[in-house]
Image (cartoon, rainbow, N blue to C red; front, side, top):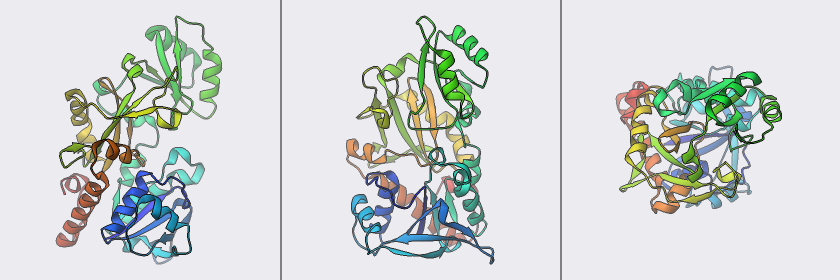
Length: 343
């Protein structure tokens, strides 16, 4: 299998990142793997998609050893044609990119699909999910009550109605710019609103008391909870101190996930839409009986799930991609997102 992985930048320092776990596992399985950043993609005069990409010699790698090799004189840098690859994994994260780079993976990935390349997650589906409003297209019962606005007055009314709310930017990730506001306490809502709205819309959500115990990330693959060797790919994040954020970048602690029927029911309720949109690998962030976010751009933390469950979930992902390539090669035709999800 010839695999291309689109990332934000080529020289990452995140050795444990899910993206490089995939790359290392693929190379260890004998596949050809190319890493290309969004800034190095190109549309060429012969109607093909190219990219200045990097790979390493075949061998046995951990993600850390792979990153070291990528930055050494062992690395191989050359122009490739993405149209000649079997699979392109879009693992760039628009929330940490600016301007043109945010949608580059989507646009070039969509063009590569015209030539029969399997591109996941599906660029057309990703284009619908460029901000947190994507969650609002799912059944109301799975998500907290939410307001998206640039009106301070409307947020004030929402706070009066709810008593306690969470305020955060419509776009963004990593727990940046997230605030809790309680109507019964003295607060500086006007200053918070001004800060969050500086770069766009403000998202105000009902406060879920269960958030005090943290949240659970559950991975879905092909619309189903990712399960390998009887273990589910999931982990729990616990808040530290008074910080309302359980995100690891914000100081949250990791624990083994305690999955329950409610979580599986949430996954089942969002499955049809995710499959239809071509979301091959997704991370659901669950608080109590609600989804706080659906992560479709470069969902991370698979290594954390592996740490607790002691199984290689990256292997399960690569095996699923191999099956898709085999079916595409055998039938020599394109498949719909729903068909691909069954392979």
